[in-house]
Image 1 (cartoon, helix red, strand yellow):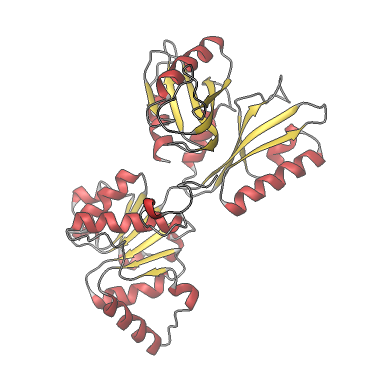
Image 2 (image 1 turned 180 degrees about the vertical axis):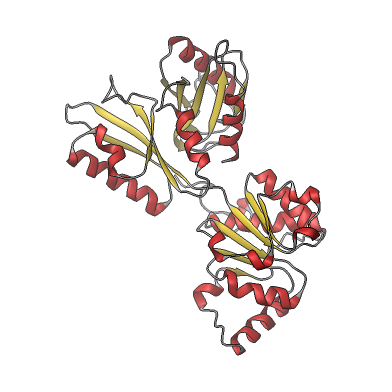
Length: 370
């Protein structure tokens, strides 16, 4: 989401009378690639760009092809194959060993189906999970939809312009699979008239939201790391105890008496770090529905809290206990507040990615699923 916001901010700064732009989007990856599907780069016809579609090896060539797409006012799909020993292929010798499809779409300010227009709607609805359908292959047009257009899926009504009831049902089945697995996918279907429609169905969750319950000095490095990661942060503490530099980095500061569990959703993490035993103990029952709960301090402290809550009649089920990480953070030997912040953020990322957080060299399979 951070990259999308940067792209939208750059687009808003453009002078539409003198500047034109295209959006490059990675819509398919086969094998290894530095960036995955959904990576984006805004290219301006003056040669500048924001975002990225690789580790730097493809941007230069994509810039040239994007400017060509702008000049033609027509989207194009470019395939980069770094698996073959071909001296004419961009990326050879870099060891990427992958095939990457990049969709280059000229952006028109008055086009409601343009990728920029749809991404602006997505960012406006900050806590909504989206499936974006980007048309990557279509000969001609279909009820106003063309290659390069994006459809933001809400329900079946969004899809009626693409085909009859049977076609929409097949497409919706693919969308539900994306929602259930939380994984983007390439979808290929045949239209009633025999034309092939290929769509990049992108699972786009809201930014991770970290709710920090505490106000001590170690909150500052934590919110800085969260900000750099492009996540959202909320602090639950007395606003008068929050330094203005900290307040400037977070989305909100909520007084403890105003805190509500409704702030928590499927993409929220909670860290209890008040450095006060009674406060953490009273806060824990309020956040037991969070997908991730981190508790600062030694294991014996957490076990004492669990025991006392059980004696008070508040039972923590096995399923809930698996979502509580105490002590919080990955075991990286963190000592300073900055290093501890890094370990906590890394653990949150690993949990939401359903990974163990170990060393990549000890991983038996590929870094990314293929």
